[in-house]
Length: 258
Image (cartoon, rainbow, N blue to C red; front, top):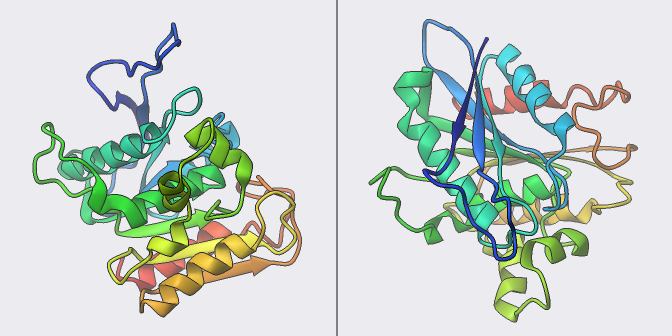
């Protein structure tokens, strides 16, 4: 396994009142294989307040073992506000797609995976990618992910993440932007989702709403609901009945032609 850290942007991204600007970056977890593989970009959760370590590198390594090239996106969180995380995700997909030959991956098989608020970020890219601005560093390179892997993801019901993302009193337009299931259409990427039925922080209805929206639009979606488990469990090492979720997602991707 090879690791490499690459900044997303040429310059540190400034934030009003922040004396130590954060430079978003990708950590590349690549494996030496004879043929190009599909890729998974991992977005850790953390309520748009932080990026949870246990939902980053270990997840990328798991997908390496499952036969994928993998990346971890260290995106901007508060005090940075919308659209900073979204622009980081846009840039990450373009950077990975443009580097397909370098990292031996299939440019038309790039999934974005997110946990909790990171799932909201992944889902946001899935539904709002047409709104992304052009990027002079990657002219003509699409930022549309080819699949979404949404792990106990915030879709429309979790006010803490919303507050951290938007800040202050959100406008009606901001509130609408946050409600991802309202923006699903026939061009939205297929999605694999998993959630626990009794998640105390992000209600299961989030996953149900997004999956239902995809099904209504004729977009392939698969939803796994595990009966019990707390929020933020990552690879779920303490919950043997849930630890299968990465393998289930890999099987689903392969059924999609990966």
